[in-house]
Image (cartoon, rainbow, N blue to C red):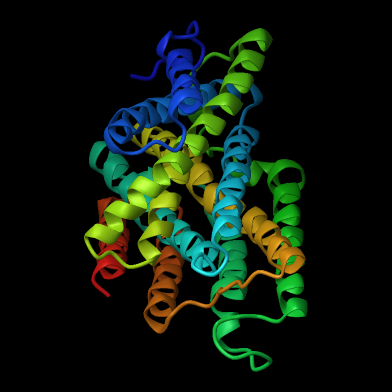
Length: 359
């Protein structure tokens, strides 16, 4: 379905966002029979976003290209979470926690596992820069612990919540640490995040400046269409989950899946093409941007509007989070991976997903 980033603009890459805009204008919020065509258009728009992101990434090079998609998707994720929290402050008090935890588990287990499994099956063994993985993981571990674990240990409040001052500290710390990481990734130690083999970055000719600007504009439109379609489909998805007795945390899983879909598709394609460094930049960068940008915005909203915000994970979630971090450190510390590591991550991710629906 996708074409090479330097090829002429394929018709489907702008048709899907255009059709999505038409559906949103005519049927936004509609359910019933419209849910299926909107879901199909959502999938096509995701592929369009991936194509345009690859055009931009090829032009600006690594790691700026993957960073653009990670930040763009996360900004829209913030808008989706915030809008749902405002619409139902009490019932959605744990939505941010559930979405962030789901993003961490989906990326570090399901997405990374699939990348390593598909890449290893096709290329036997793949390499990447362990220094970049170490940088990603160190920041992800600290931020996830502050946001999802520490609220369970504080004594100023009862339950998995923080005081206003504590939330403010966590929000500032998340944004500050993410800013430092971006500085390291793009300027101070940019070479850590580049492929060790120069041929990995030479898989496509750079597009023209005009094509890049067009792709950047269409990327923004596609991402906006994705999040609006996802928001429009949320009531139907929620009703479907309620009808089968799914727990409240399943809503966060669905939101995380929808938001991470563009980066996931791009990462899987890169892994199959033996560009594991690019795949990891996309995967790990997406979850890092998710925490580093979403947390400050959600915390600011909770403080300004005096809305309840549940952050701490239940005990089973903390156990799975700790296991995920340990396995990720072992897998990504060596700089070489095979199908075995992919199978391990995938098994842990499937165990988490199963326990979401069968707690």
